[in-house]
Amino acid sequence: MNMPIDQQIEKQADNQRHYNIIQDSKGVPIKMWTKGVHVDENAKTQLLKAAQMPFIYKWMAVMPDVHVGIGATIGSVIPTKGAIIPAAVGVDIGCGMMAARTSLNASDLPDNLIGLRHELERLIPHGMTKGRGRRDRGSWENTHQRVDEVWAELKTDFDYICAKHPRFKNTNNHKQLGTLGTGNHFVEICLDEHDQVWIMLHSGSRGVGNAIGNYFIELARQDMQKHFINLPDRDLAYLVEGTEHFDDYWFAVGWAQRFAMKNRELMMEAAVVALKNIIPKPFNAKVEAVNCHHNYVDKEEHFGTEVLVTRKGAVRARFGEYGIIPGSMGANSFIVRGKGNQQSFCSCSHGAGRMLSRTEAKKRYTVADQIEQTQGVECRKDAEVIDEIPSAYKPIEDVMQAQSDLVEVVYTLRQVVCVKG
Image (tube, rainbow, N blue to C red; front, side, top):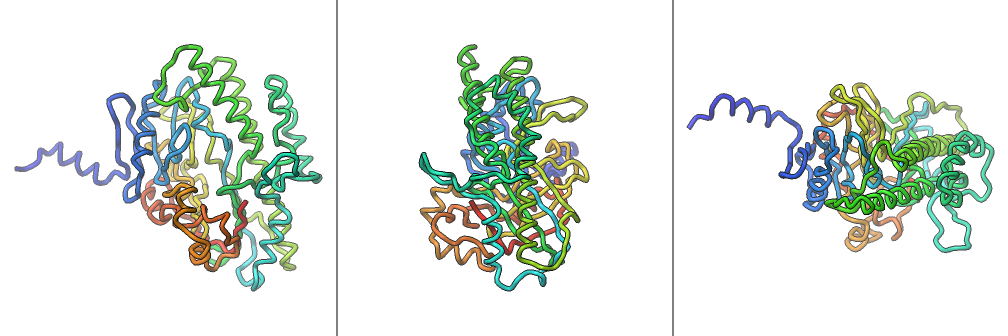
C-alpha cells in the first residue's frame, strides 16, 4: 500500500531531522540531538519531569552528552518565561571552558613534559584538602597581586549580596579566585591539527558559587512549601520573576558567572607563565581565545520573545560564535563555531558526557586501565583519578556526529599534558 504524499513528506523530514522528539501528555516536547548516542532511561525520565513545568517556553532541547544530573538533566537547555529553577543552573555556577592558541609549535615543547605539568601544578592551586582546621591546598595561602586586583572588581557586588544574605561572608571566595578545583576540572596543554600549542582549561565559580547555588535551591524549596506547590521532583523548585528571592538570585547568579569567567582568565595567565618558565622561546598566547560558560542562565531572544535560557551542561552556539567541546582525558577536544540552530535555542554539547557514574568507574577500572587509556598524555595516573578514565565517557566522535547541524569543527585538539584536581 502506497503511503499518502503528505505522510511521505513528513517521513522524509523526520529522516533529515537531526533530532528525535520525546513527550508525554503532561509536558512540552523535548528535542533530543542524540542519534547514535546512548541515552540512559533515567535521564529520559528526568527530562520528562522537567518538561512538565508550566513556564517552559516552546520546548526543551537536549544535547548528545546528556546524562542524569541533580535538579535538571546534564546536557539540557531549558528556556523559561517568568521563572528560574536554581537546581537546573546547578551549584557549579558559571562552570565553563577557556582556550588560547599560542604561537608555539609541538617542536618547541620539551621532550619530557613532566616538568611542564609540575610547573602548572605549582602555579595553579588545584584539588582539595579535606578536614577542618587544615589549609586547603586548592586555595591560596596568600593571594598574589593579580588575584587581589581582580577580586577588587568583584568585591563591591559581593558585599551587596552578603549584606542581604550574610551566610556568604564565610564562604571560600577571594582565596579561591584563580584556582582549579576538583572532579572533571582540568588544565591542559594541547596540539591542534597543525601541531600548534594550545592551553585549555575547565573550571567554574568554586566554593562561593556552590554556596550560592545550594542556598537559593533551598529558598526555592521553601517557597514551594509556603505556597503549597506540588512538583514532579523537589529539585525542580523555582523562583518566580518579580519576587525578592528571584531578584536576589538573579543578581547573585550573575555575579557568580562573572567570578567564574575571571577565575578562568587568571588561571590562563598562570598557565602562560608556566609555559614561559619552561620554554625559553618568546611566544604569544593571544592569537585566539575562547571563554564560555556551560552551566548558567541568561536572558536571550528566541522566536521574537525574550526568555530566560538555562544551559545545564550546554554551550551557546549562535551563528559564528565560538565554543569549546572537550573530550575526556586521552580523547580529542574541539574548538567549534556555532551554526545558530534555533531548534536547539542556539546550543551545543559541553563535552562527551558521562556513561558511568564516578563510583561505577572506580569499581570497573584499575590504575592499569587508566595508564593504558591515557598513553601519550603527561598526567596523573593513580587511583584517585580513575573516575575520569576515558571509558567512563561517551565516545566524543559519536557526540560530535549527533550535533553536526549545531556546530562546525574549527580545530581538533589532542592533549599532551593534563592537570586534574
